[in-house]
Image (cartoon, rainbow, N blue to C red; front, top):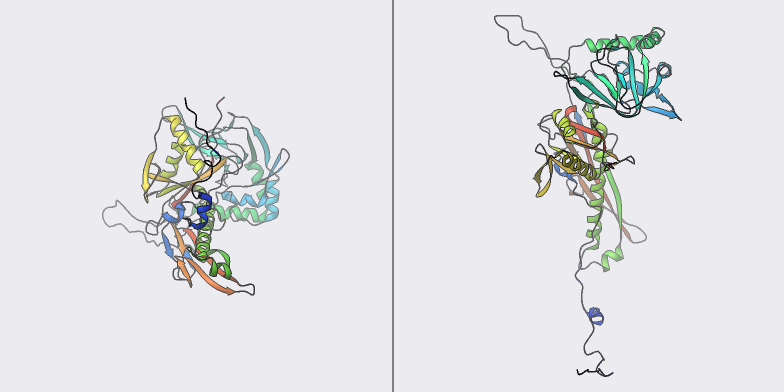
Length: 467
């Protein structure tokens, strides 16, 4: 074997190195990248209505509101007390404003504790109490036609039962069974009527509630339009009219804004091959659009999560979102256009489908393949919050003015418009040679009729540990 040994002269560099060569070379650059950019499905699927006057009024038929929202509670150690103003969410106290009477009623509720599997109320028994669910999950059960038990739904924190009629006791039409450890606040009707006998404002409130219940209405609570059908001969036809809501809701356009600052030296000297000002504006506009979608989901005035009607809010049957829960959402409205869910909620739905041996559909939207259920696409939206307890919400909606659905609101042709509803205005150069640009997006969202929007609340998105 012959071994060649390199001499010192042979080890010298024979050509120009890459590190030195790069000083004479250019680089291929990408535009600035941004992790915050998301698909923004909500902005893409909402039909946008041009609001020329800046305000959008939703006119509806007169509806007799009877409450039905969730009550709130204050906790001191193991003691739970209902917050008095939230009692107006009970149907018979809807619109009641006497704070002293509400304080008195709040102090009359009795706290009770139930273990999983305990019966809180039984079908067919007298409904002689108003029940408030302060903590835990309660199943509404009913006996089926073939002797099995049917699950009608679930109640949880803030829900109530037995507070519909002021002339009780009636009878329970369903059984309430504790699914977890449950804390209930109960107020017997006898105690409630005794308090009403001592309070003239409360007696007047109950009379107003009886009058609301006596008004002719359809199953959606709207003032009835009387129509004769199936008759023969020449009967006297009913006279009727379609009454309007005297106080229609008006949506004002909200705004997301920021001031972009660019030093003129940067814009003048470091402007090639990419325009620094344009790249700064592009990234800023993306952030403004992300904030717009976040507000359309979470804003307490017009956000979808806070504007769902109480009758369109349901809870999952077992915790994670399953096929039964999404079916319940779909059956409450016609022409459901899409679901919106956090990616973790979609993953939880897939796990439930896998556990049951069910395979969800898929759909192609704008060239992207997404999960679907019953032909309705489930679009990911990371703006829907996930709580520390590992729960989230799933939104379903019908869209468009023609279908009385959910619509987005914007104004076309605003000064300095760069994109529909978004403007960029140059506001000048200050004494430090910094140029400023005002970036504004004006928008809102409106729900035309209550059943256009539904929410599945408090779904568990974290995987369960098998014991």
